[in-house]
Image (cartoon, rainbow, N blue to C red):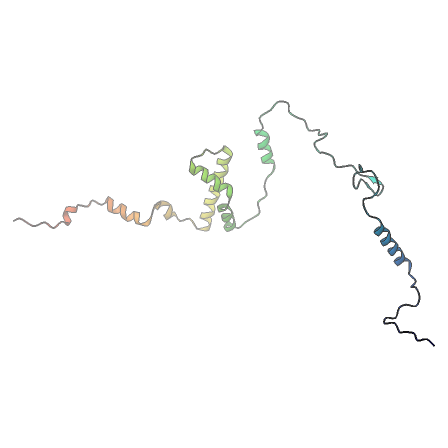
Length: 184
């Protein structure tokens, strides 16, 4: 009798029978693996043009076919801009006075307008109104939070200035402090 060597790994004796789902999945994988390159068709076809048997409109330029009337003569646009500006009120979230003061002090528009005023530039009417309202609100917030002292407003200077003014206003006769000898 001939000797048969044992295999290191025992294999299956017969071919395994596949169920329908696994057979379909393997066929699908093989079919996808065989296909390489672009799908057949005209190179002029728009990608994604048909979907589920329905054709989609290609995205059109919104400027084409506009029904908006075009003015042939240029008119004063300030009224239209004012109406548009008033039509969109900006909802402001309710802030605490501290948060509102912080927001006002960090406002870029306010800082640029104040810089322009310091430089002597003229502001537009709209900017002046906005600046006045904002500064008035800032003043109200300072008074409400107690950060504004009336003493500081009246002094306008350094604390030593008051003493200097009293010295200058006093009628000082330097002769009374001189030590003169009596000639009698």
